Length: 313
Image (cartoon, rainbow, N blue to C red; front, top):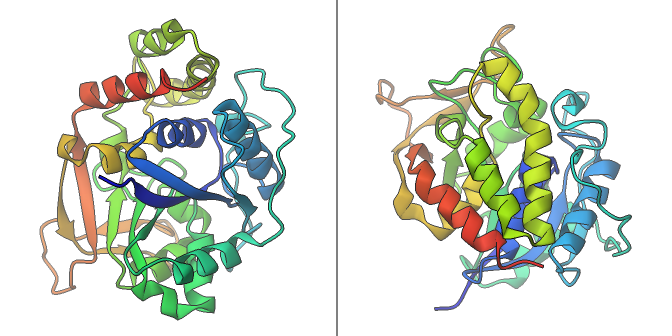
């Protein structure tokens, strides 16, 4: 079977970095490019971090493009309080040498989807949805060519992680999220309801370290750093691991459950700005627009992650 062709849109972030490593280690996926966006840290830093991760994986052949430096309509909100000043605190990684391609990330998305056979190429979004929203505004014709979007976004029962109501990726650019969810594209949403079940326990991080290869050890060091904030916030034994769940869905959809529902983004609420409003019980007549996941076999997820990271340098 031919590998699935994907582009990864990301704002690394330790969990983004582990998601990139998982994708690059998986022969079922062909990563056709990486596009960065401002989110966890500003764009210059997310792009720098993506360069480091691609070099860590030994995949400097993957085209890297810098995308949007700010949300569509509001000032940028970042998360150094979680990820550290660099966004990739934890391991000591060398200064990257691989180049960033000249083409803007939004233009790369447009050209890539236009060049691909309709449905052949899909998009995985790990950060705010600014790049794909801008691409859809600039080139509406690509909507008919995108295979699907698998996004880390949303929260139903878990509350928000940046405000009491909103998850970070939607809160950073809610207008972009609203535009994408209204686009009619096939969308799978991987929300905090799923990722909060994937706790990076000491045993799971120790299993990564025990692999001994540089990528797996660096992943364990990244997660050991970033989980300190969430462990204090939630009072749990370990922190949730978010972004790799989107890649795991492409590899093992059988370990997830969910349903087709309507999800909208709140753009006006004083207390709920950026909230994903999930019509789980279909109490409105709004047409379902999202495959909304709500559970995962966490043991199978970490087994997959550990097995695949062992394949990297």
